[in-house]
Image 1 (cartoon, helix red, strand yellow):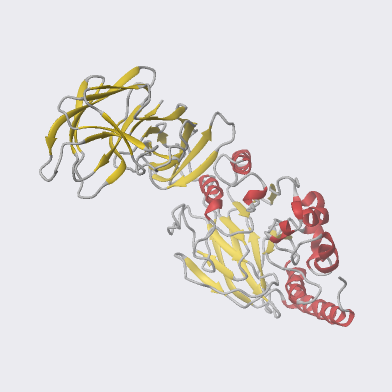
Image 2 (spheres, one colour):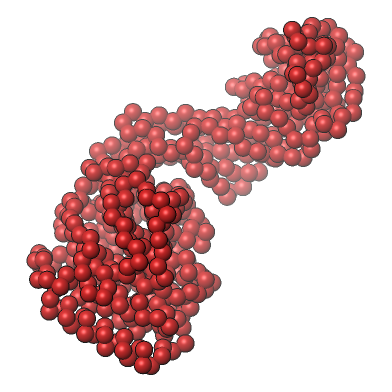
Length: 535
């Protein structure tokens, strides 16, 4: 909708007056700091939420007249839903006056209009490919990367997503002493104590490339962090400094819990961050409305890439049915499978693992971010899976995918043709058993023999007060004596698991009833509920 005429005229006159005064006095109201000729300037703020019913975005836009240079709109530029009409009618008369010098990025509200069509329609080629919304450019000697933190709209932000692969390639193709990046959702913020973990791969790639500055918005506050590494630890020599500048004009937000390395926090203030980009350093000034007073400022040198450029050494994941786990009663429910791998790095240490999964031969992978080198997942019976691992070290280096071999999850009930019995075993129906039944024996030297192929095998049984003991043999070699006693009934228990078998060979697992009690048991009962092979 069009702006109210008198309100708009008053705001326009005020904006012009402020801009003229600032041009005379300099950006702080005092004589401006001398800058080297040719050093570029970047003026940044997000969340202008330019609206036809309020003038806070005009006040911040007025600061742009005195700053000059390139304008970085950090997303949520127009009021939701970010339609083309809102951009033209409401954003256009304020921040849009500097459209020709603006290099924008997408906020979440831009996608309130499907495909962010209003944003791309308004900015055109300056916004990059509408299917991506990420791009890069050079500003003086600096390389600047613009990313899209609306991860679900562009195929994800995780390691090996299209955007992450593009980012790694772009940084490799543009080595620079000084690098800056910006996107909408901040990696760290005291306005949201969880931060945005899904953009962690961006931070890793940028850290590995020696980036110096990251700008974000989303939270309508100003916050400056000390340089940080991948673990959110202070890192003055190689860390990335993050500025959250969601102060372009949207409704005020506040802070929740102060995060580590947060140095300056300013709430309930509109303003613009001015960055002067020198060949080997940068200066920052956060200028507030309405008087353009500088309320945070400083300088820092660029540092270049870390000396460690060697990726971690990672072995592919192995898999096993974890001992002592419990299956669901339904034989169509997922089964627990533990994945383990090794990752070593002699210089910077491992900070993160990325596990990717493909199911039933599909080319589409899902991924998990983990802090340890093992995890237990629930996988469908009779499904086929393949897993790969990447690790990130403290310098942001990653290995190529270490992919394991595909395997199938193959549970076999106690009455399967793959199981042969010798002795006085009896079949028992049971509502608590896996699949509804078990085989039982208390007779010494009775055996149940499961023939299978695969890398891992597990025996599922019931533990209880009358549980006895059994000897387990794999390929006719005695491995372990299993005690099935428990003070209370524990059905569908994985009582034995063996990993590391040759997956190409045939194997046998034999359960031999010993006919003996444990110290507390009232019986010698041995159950076979099921066997599970990973083949």
